[in-house]
Length: 308
Image (cartoon, rainbow, N blue to C red; front, side):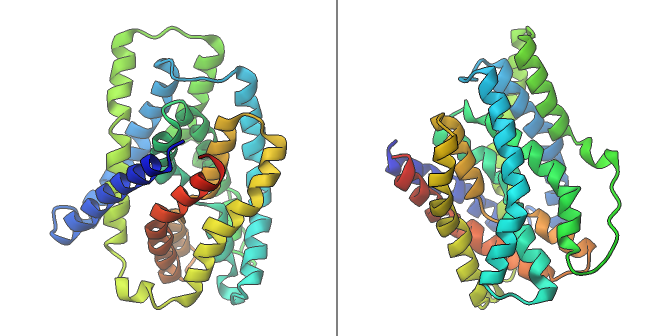
């Protein structure tokens, strides 16, 4: 795998993200439009991309590989809260922000940035596998995620089955059903799904850029602990976990998607949940900005170390 090709692909994604940042500052994009665009990507283009990955015949793995990926994703998301706790302890963060740091480790940006990045590195065949991680991400987000964010508050968290009925989860489940049943789909519908799904990458990166534009840059670079957190989360952790993953995952595509998913920057959901639970939203926003900015370099580094 040519590392310069991967680096240039990351630069392309970064440039689209920078465009979103610029468009926000010249008021072509604004907060309300960004929210609607986010809803559109989450509920329309991403589900279409997930289904297109199955219908278009890009899937290059067996049914046992899919089941194995499910098992890997479940195990990883069960262990990540403990990893987050260890990292928070190493950084000696205050108790009142302990939940935020754990949350930031568990819930990386696999939804928005995961699809474009894994697709850029491993091709279309990685989309369906990434969707499995995103499915587990969403299930965890609306269950364990609420408990993590309220860590130390003693607040009772209530769950509803409606939290799990998102278009992304439904599309992922349908994709699994269609794949296992070899359900035939007319080419006109396949091409429609592909065309709509292809919008996901540029729109997702525009959204991330516009979101970062709402964060004061000066405040970001004043938070010294975020530098250490970014280094540990996006460089040290993937390097340490790779030998463990390679012991159990023999399929190079599954291994790659798994490691890159763990190397993603902090997800936007930390700000949403921090707001809901009256936590430090500024800390979450700073971490999103810093980890996203540096991911342009850290992700190619991880690829160069293990997949070149």
